[in-house]
Image (cartoon, rainbow, N blue to C red; front, side, top):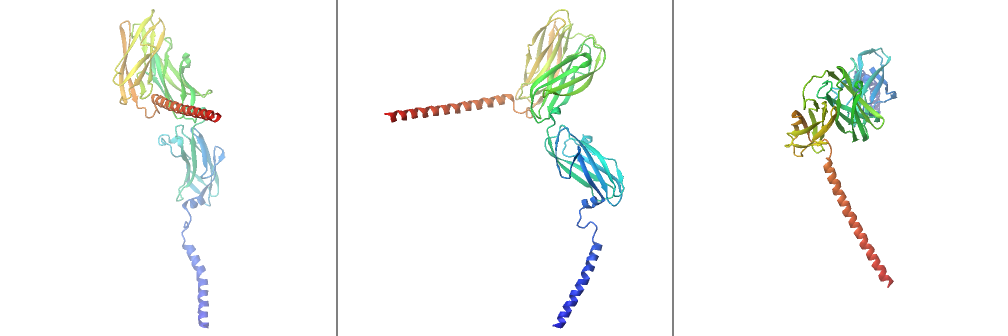
Length: 437
């Protein structure tokens, strides 16, 4: 027994001596990054110590509320570890934007490459813009730090909740077209198409579009009753006649959209006015101006196609408007009439409303508009871009039909309720009379 106890004591002593040595040897051969993430190693080499977004401190993983159109001004402070940082650069980018490839200058920003001595700090400024046409959704704002030495990168992620744009910039002009050309003779007219979209959080009432050439002191406008949120609409009945005495040259044309009572947005383009050439049109002293194309959406009330008629003669003239090539796919109507009488030196706009049949195939269609006066006629070919109503919401006709059905159902239910109440009252009256007798 004494021998066994002695051997046990010797074994315990050997274990106590060998264990620290093994631990030291294990520590000596253990890889530097064992059990430590690559980001932690990178962080020991260089770290992001502070981030401010629009002057507010933001921590990795924070939730950010932004609106479409917001500009995010980002200040990032970095600190080097115990060795110099060489050829590093910092980037910021907004993820989840459909057109990021084409608008990379808007949704991304990078610093130039830089070096930073050990244990030193340095701040950098980056700017990223939330696109106005970005979808309302959750996205990510990412900060990424690269350098030439570490095996990984330092990344900060921010959860971004994107909402509609601010009220003062809710409406944006998507397109501003001039027809038939940006070069026009003095005395003739230009047609304009302005497409707008409501990027805000609310529906808007009484949206007005004005097109003006300030230098010539001329303008025209059109209004719509309602522009729903995330809805686009086009203003097409916009015509401006260039004064016959306008001097040749370049002129600025300004489209202004007024909305929400006190808000507005503008976009401008340029037209060139040249001297008029003497050429007969419909009637020896008449000028006819009309667009060359029109968009028509199936399932709607159609589109308005303006025809401007100017009588430059010394007497009144009667103008007759006719249309051909529409019957196969749609219908047309004239407002106020297809026959107008215009006094000497006066002008009038006739609006041609073009509507598509429900069974008409989408695509480009062609029809002709003829204006006749004094046995002289001017004929213009018009291209119609016929579109399906799938992206336009429920057609007005369908809405009215459903409203009528609902009204009939409500009236039937109301009639049944009144009948039941009357029968119940009669029964109560009979019961009261029997009780009395």
